Image (cartoon, rainbow, N blue to C red; front, side, top):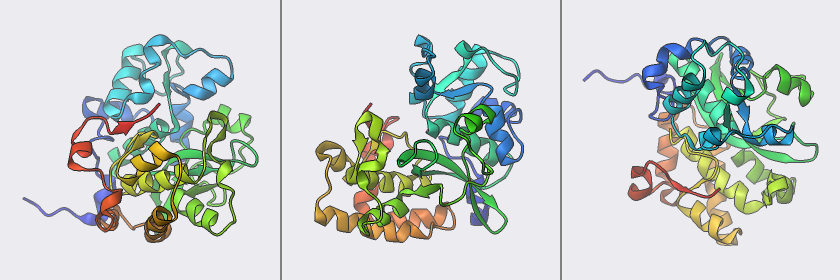
Length: 293
């Protein structure tokens, strides 16, 4: 067997990002990172934003946000409208998803072109003033480092949220990985009550801590849904609190992630050091990790 070039590991698909039989359709949304966001807006919408602007989620689309694999997302999109994905659909034929799915479609499109890309779990400050909103994005190789692509920010979204920055290179002051928000919270610089989804009653140190675990998993190639919990995260889900001993554990993981691992191999090495942050064999072997929604 030929040796794998680890420098390209983030350009290789995971089981979640693999487009399966729809690889050719990814070319319809490919391009420079910001263009991907423009094209996704032609057939993908966040289910909560749809509701907020008075668009009912069609019954067949209620399950879209539970589709873990890009191949299933693409299958659903093509089944509803077989035209190129770059062509605008009727709203009833859209995918109604979460930020994770925008990010995963972008990750998949970039990986399919041989560009290193990965899912990241963190918080954005540009959706609601004074709130660090739970938000998953696509991170992609740019020059010698990584840049953040918010694939949810197509033209209409940019207008609605008054976005003035390049959505293919989101400023780090506008989006922060979970580890950075955790460390800022521990330093007394961020109120945990404004971190998460406050409008839904989901916010606080427990959510930030669980997000640190999810981001560690995403970096290592475990591209879970936003409501997946495993390991110590399941304790946070159950208790909605973080004890001081547990906070010390998250401190260590957050410190290891503060300077993000260079690639998936390095991230897997970090995760291997924290048994309590890893899915068990039972959890990892299921098609669905522990979930709440």
